[in-house]
Image (cartoon, rainbow, N blue to C red; front, side):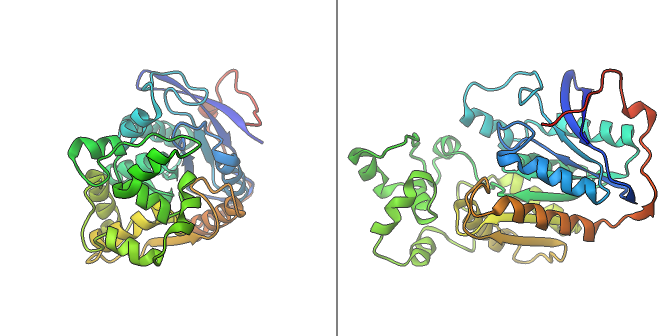
Length: 328
């Protein structure tokens, strides 16, 4: 069963879906899924829906909420996807996500939240986990992005300063322009998007070229430094974190570099890292959605065990007039 919920926070009216927990095991923490980039709260391939359903069956109250301007929620948004990406990178949704967390905890009588999701959802949740560790009890990050956009890299004159425009086909001019493009080489070596088919023309071992492109002992010039600092503090505090990446892809490689340079001297016993084979950035190939959900459910259940109960009471104020069942 799913229920539509309305949240009025920070001057925004937001809409979300509540997955009531099954009877049998009560969890004192809820699970909040945020929008993956500009995608509605259902997630790519229904990833967030499936995860919420499985976790609710294990006793977790689960919520999927559309942030302002996304999905069913009204609000202003930048005109382009790249501008939205920059907004998320800078923590533009953190304030409203904080208000959402606080309201859901209050309304449903929860001790805290597990928060996260794919890509931009992981970014927002990480900023919030760093700022509010008492409220964000755990963090799950799918394909986290610790680097700036190419436009921002160009502004600071860092690696990948050339701004590239995506298109379905590569012209000869564009192919030659990639010869000295940091991002072009990275995408080709990690088989990202249209660049994957060019990998067969590379006459050298992939790892050797990656080692040449990357200084594994320092942060790259395109690093989102405030986000990495937040990451260091979260790991150092020992907050439970689950990280899932598509093995060998761009974000997986960057996470390795961030991990080696930013966490080299930090203990991280509460960090769980899993690499999913044979999939893409949004986990829609190779059965990765099922694998992702399985790993998330196992991690959440082990890290946040509940107590036996016959039912999980829902505070009366949690259900507002006009609440509906929804299937999305």
